[in-house]
Length: 316
Image 1 (cartoon, rainbow, N blue to C red):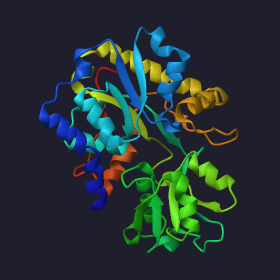
Image 2: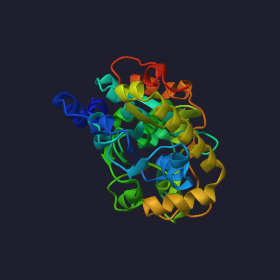
Image 3: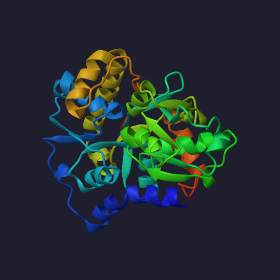
Image 4: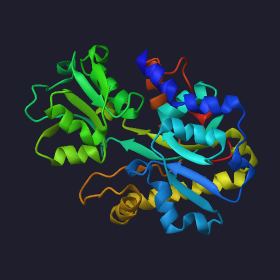
């Protein structure tokens, strides 16, 4: 299955590092903690925490870095050049099943059906009106291992379509409307901020809030570290957990201020009135289980996985 192969490839670079026996530099130097995340709304907590001084107040010297390559992120944590990093739940689950010794230590963005942040879009003049109209069509997604891809598949299959008939192609979210207008794709599954950009423009309309097919609420991404680091530095891990939860709670209530911080790190304007990501304010394995069930259903995971097995015991 193509989806399974691509999900495993996400952790391929990390497995090379693990099997090579490369010495983890971060584990040997506790002075600086390197935390990596995506410089977008979904990965904003660490950037807010940095600018709010939360790491410094907790007595932690932290270097915050922007990473957008899941394979490089996982390899960095396993190899020791990164201490903690963010990755989607599918990436973390595939990594664990592939044998990478990583554990979740803090939640990141969550999906809530009241404020959908991902969806399937089509051109306004498209004849596509329902899931079965997508059968045999070409759909763009940022990468064929992310939540937008799995969410779109789930919505199509639950609403009368057949995702196995669809050709999936990888297109960066901001480029999907142009790809539809050029006739290269018939639809696209995109997330914020590209979703709002598309829907505020003259060309696209929303076909479906596809994440609703997974659940009303679930965790999209999380922060992880190695099992060894969590075991050897439980106090640091607990502090990072508390800081990320606090930064997420702050951002949920302060959209204008968090937008300014995010603009600085991402270089992308956060326009007023756009839908913002919701951050988890609690550590709940129950918010991860719907995603794991979905991955098992589509054969991405060879066997069912329990969400509790992904979380480090050093954090609540």
